[in-house]
Amino acid sequence: MSAGALLGIFILTFKVTIRSKWLLMFTIVFFFFAFNLPFLSLQLLNLIPKNYVSTFIQIIISTSFNLMPLLALPLGAVSIVEERESGSLQYMLSTPISRGRFLAARAAGLFAATTGIIVLGFTLAALVAFQLSPGSISLWYVTVAACLLNAAMIGISLVVSVIARKRLTAHGAAIFIWFLFTYAGATALAAPVLAAANRYWVLLPWIFLNPVEVSRLVAVMQLPSGVQDLGSTGQAMLYIFGGGALLVLWVTMAMWIAISLMVAFFIFTFQDIR
Amino acid sequence: MLAVESVTKTFGKFKALDAISFKVQKGEAALLIGPNGAGKTTIVKCILGLLRYEGGILVDGGNVFNDGGRAREKIGYVPQAVSFGYDTSIEEQALLIARLKNARKGDAVSALKDAGLWEIRRRKVTSLSHGMRQKLGISMAMLTDPPLLIFDEPINNVDLKGQLDFRERVVELSKRGKTLLIATHLSGLSEFMATAMVLHRGRIVAQGTPRDLLTKMSSADTLYVRVREEDAPKVREMVEGQFEHRGNEGPDNSKVRQNNEWLVFSLPPGRKASLLKEIQDAGYEIKDLIIEPSTIESQYVKMLSEEAQAA
Image (tube, rainbow over the protein chains, first blue to last red):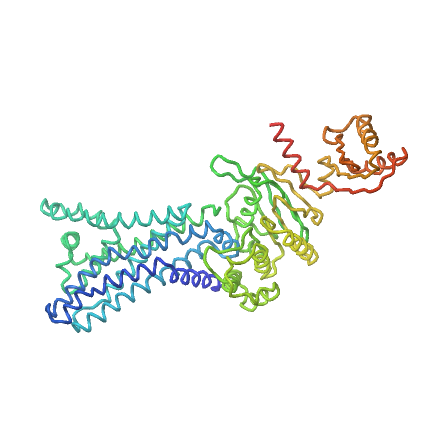
């Protein structure tokens, strides 16, 4: 098996993802979300203080993590089931390529296309921030955290895609999973109550079982005024793990990626391709 | 080249294949025929390693279960509808398949040129007719010149010209020494096949050379005999009488239909000449004669309808 087969699936996946209408719609929404025109107008007219830029961008970063799974989840969730429905999956797998390599190339293609959009978005945000307030913010860690979140979402979406029988089911499941993570993140608002009861550890499952929250915390912990934006979950992590909190979060993200991809590989390798 | 040994496949409680066994020798053309839902596509998917199964499948000595990749290197697969869900062009699809099969870009270009598709290489595959897609599918299956070619329902939704073209391709591929396995529910291909298997409800109910199968299935050719219109009732009576006299025919075989001067009846092979001679000896002129030979397809349709009636 040469690298040509892997490259073939990678290129196909990349092309199809880049051309997809969902990606286009997401990019437009993400652009308008990040490129807050009313705020920028106020800034350019000097109606708000210059140092407000970094605060604004931090808010955007923090909230954008909730939005980000909506890019990879639906695209990844339909990627296998769509081909299964059309018969092209059977056709491609009738060639010498193994299922493991096929899925690896598929995941890589999805990752490259969706991460490209995210990196581009954050780079634009960094450029705007730099123009308005030079040296105010470093987006390096934020971008890495976003890429990790994206990789975990691709892993989860591929699990959905290899299990689902119908494209519509896969799409619905992807949206539900996004809703679940967003909602699960919101339930952590109960943290102050738990904190008051000195039961921070109760929050740990809510954090570890939610890759969106984990990646958001990774990003926010790197921001200059991160502590303010950590929220109750972040405070709980610092309270329990102290200086090692960031490392625990990085490891958790890595595990989300590894486990989700392994589950997808396992199911795909041993299932019937009807 | 291909050995399927006691392959069983179940989907939940449904047994799609029940201990199927057959062999296709190198350079042989085999027909796998059966109605929709008989298990033809299931067995093809097992051979391609797409479905898990019990039993054994060997392609050129390589085990599909343990070393699917190597086994699939020996197979060129032409599915029912060669198409991607995406809007890929002919050229894009050819290049992708070339990559998946470890073929060079030049091979894909040559294959498209040979198939007469190079001029329209920028057209979307979805815009092609079924026949053109099949042409593309065959050229892609042949990319690495594999010894075994598997066709799944190759003439479904194909017009008459497409069917005739496909026959020509089958003959040509056979002459080139390719091993062929054609799974279909309507073929008209049995005359070109070295062996045929009739699949029904996941079981092979008949297997052998087409001629053997026709004998086993007590097949009957259909005769259209044209006599003088005034002689037709008498000849009909005579033929019916012959059937009654012999007394060993089934109810279908003894039926003689008359349409003006044409008489239509069925006879097993080996009985035609003697009966026609008897008609002429009785002084009736045979003005025209058409013999429609029995085919495996017509026999299996008959067999299945008899089974349905019995049920």
